[in-house]
Image (cartoon, rainbow, N blue to C red; front, side, top):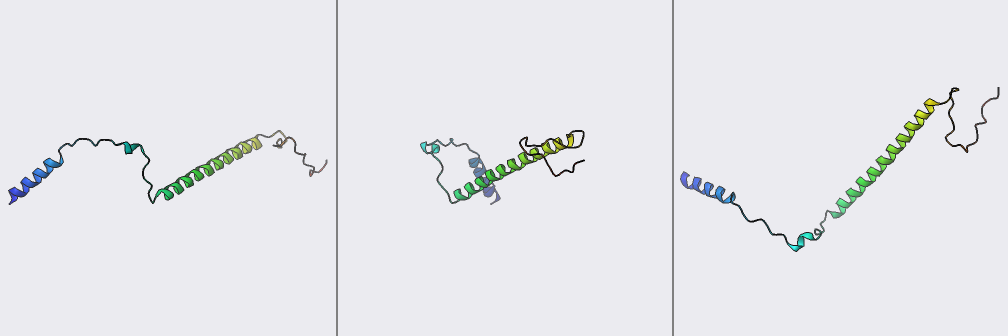
Length: 98
């Protein structure tokens, strides 16, 4: 009995390891895949990832602008004041006169 089982397992292993011809490509391979129930979910996830990337880019841009502005504020002139960011802005008249 053991010999028959061993021979059967050996025959199945030999048949499973045999080579078969590669599948031939059809003209249908060029077409888009058929729609599935997950298409809407996948599109929603893709939109969310794009939106998140856009938001992260905006935050990074603002952080770079703030860092540049902070570095500009630290450089300032000898009196500790800085040049106004808007050259058309009116000067601050709240300062007390000497």
